[in-house]
Length: 115
Image (tube, rainbow, N blue to C red):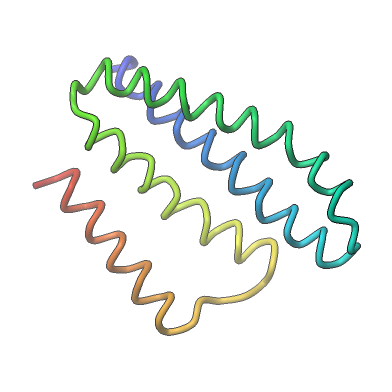
């Protein structure tokens, strides 16, 4: 069981680091206006996140023997992490269209994993 949880944790952590760096970088660049320094501060975080994602995909495919399950887990983690971080960092709620899109995305992930 641990062999199947480890890829999920790697994917979740990798997506969290990558998305977090993207969102923090965009907010900081907009507030400070210093794109180059913000980019180089966020770059190592994205590199670490990417390394975790590569490891998660490799271990996930090894364990599940199906790349679509691994892809669904990755997209599912994005579906959880990105709205949460966007709300926490920007204090904005989604528009009606974005909310509908998130719900439909969640249904698609659930269908991939459970059907």
